[in-house]
Amino acid sequence: MSILSVMSEVKRPPRSEVRERILDAARKTFAADGFAGATIDAIAAAAGFTKGAVYSNFGSKDELFLALLDQQIQRRAELLANVSSAPSADAGTMATAVGDALMQAVRDNLDYHVLFLEYLLRATRDPAVRKKFVDHRRAVLAQARDAVKANWEPSTNLPIESVAQLVVALTNGFAIEEIVAPGSVPAHLIADVLKPLAGNNRDPRRR
Image (tube, rainbow, N blue to C red; front, side):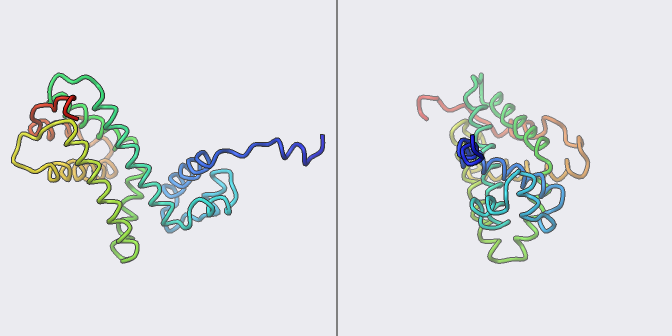
């Protein structure tokens, strides 16, 4: 069999797999070297692809980071959906499950939160980057709002949007504390804050 024949039989990985491998490599490289220090060459090498393969999927380092942010949003959405699909006796139980899941997600992704803070500083100094970053933050808040609205009625006078913003702020703030002093935030603290805000669960038939 000729070399050309062998090469023709080698299947290229699906584009979705290529993107996932690049994103995983980017997250690790950014975490190790910082956003400014990381290079597309290093990310490509870590992913096992050429630099051209990275650029064919992501136009720049900024686009790559924003895709990482999209990935985090999607994973949090899946996490909340999984928690929401579990049987729950009451809204307090649901709030506890959501809070504990979010806290675990924070602890499992501290390298991402370090990168998030670094990119936040970049966004505050560059108007073009800031605009894209703000759009993504709005998407995060919309996701949190939809999750709150779908699963429990807050038992306070706070609007749904404010409760959602509180959830996002808690996870970001506790992430900072965990970065500085791992293990310093009690495991159930988010849940303890959310439980007093929880009212009765929505009837699933109303969803």
